Every structure is written in structure tokens, then in C-alpha cells.
Image 1: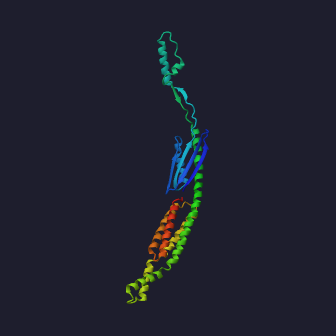
Image 2: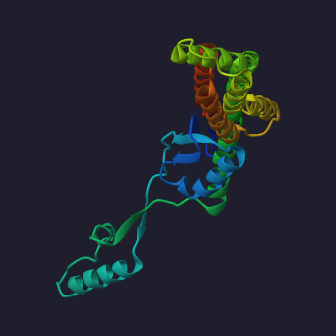
Image 3: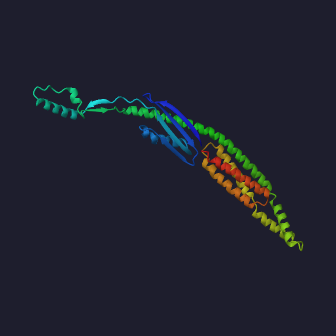
Length: 293
């Protein structure tokens, strides 16, 4: 099922962030996350939240965080390098008569004495940041679920209309199926009359037996009963309130099998036409079932 959701928020330090979630049709559930450097440790938690909320669909989630102003680097002396530089400066100054004492800024300017450090966020700050991002993701999941629910309501109407069409075709097929024995008798009588060319007549008893055998082979009542049962099962799935996409796809396959058998057993152009219309409706049902969670 398709859907889109967008949630914006603010981190404890004032930095803004935006979650964007998209969902498209898929036979199973595939969750893909695009996270910037930093909160990537959240991925298992976010993936579990999405998997507990949805059962089908290809879901992609992307997080964008406004570039934050990082604290200015802080200069700190390297204790070992400072001691070595100071000792070396004092030693050189002592060996030069009248040389003034080494100046502090000169020693600090020596390579390796000072180093730049950027303060790392404290653990509680990182936890608060991750909590804000997770809360925003959960809100986006709920919005995506609502978007998919609205699409599901539209799909339900389309699927019910297709099931009504299939049920009507099954009723028409049942009416034509009742005429199949008479059609077999007329067709067999015409064929025999052409072959025998009026030389002699086939006993009515023998003709009745042959017609009965043909009627038995072309009896489609079982197929029609199964089609009606599949319609009822599909309607129950749609009205059940549970994820039904995969079971609907399975039922669509069963619909197709019965429609094929109905066409193979048909003894009239009318029934053959109905079987073709059934196949077309069932194919539309199968396509729409792929969109259902």
C-alpha cells in the first residue's frame, strides 16, 4: 500500500530535524532507513517499531537534521610535549650567556605542544537526542499508517465492487449451466442426423445415455459452488479488520482455477463468454489484492 508521512521536530539543543516516510506496494515487508552520521545506532530500534506496525509494503524512511553549530574547538596543552619543550628551551637558554628566559608563548607555539579538542556530547545529552528522534519517527509511523488506512478504505470499495461483479457472473453462469444438457442433446442429435443422413434412427434410450454422459463431464455446479464460496470468503477477509493481502492473492489464484475449469467444460458460447468475463474480473481482483496489506 502506498502512503507518505512527514514529521518535523526539534532536538533538546534546538537543532531541527525532519522525518520523511514513504510506502509503496510489496509482497512482503521491507524497511529501509537513511540516517545521517550519529544516530545510526537507532536503526535496530526504529526498524523494530516499523515491523511491529506494518505487515506488507516497501517502506523507506529518511532523516534530515539541520546542520548544527558545533562548539568552538578548545586548545589544551599536551603535558608530555609541554615538559619536553620547556626543558629544551631552558637548556638552550642556559647555554647562551645573557639569554633571557624562554617566553611562554614561544614554548606554546612549538609543534605538538597545543592540541585542539572538540567537546563530545555527554551521555545524557545523546540519550535525550535519540529519544527525540525516536518520538518523531513514531509519530511519522502513525501518520503513515493513517495514510495507508485511507487508501485501504478506497481499495475496499473497489474490491467489493469486483466481488459483486464476479458474483453476478457466477449467477449468470448458473442459469446457463442448467441449459447444458439440452444443448448437448440438440448438438448430438444434429451431428447424428448429419452422419446417418436419415438412413436409420438411434434409439432414444441410447441417445439419452450419451447425453447424460456428456452432461456429467460438463457439469459445472461444483465450480460454481466453489466460486460462490470464494466470493464469500473474500468478503469476510475484507470486512475482518485484519491484514488480508496475502490471503486475497491466494483466493484470486483459486478464483482463476475455477474460471478456467468453467471455460473448459462450457458447452455454449454464452457460458464461454461468461468464463472469459470472469477471468478478466479475477485478474483485476488479483492486481488490486497486491495493494492490500
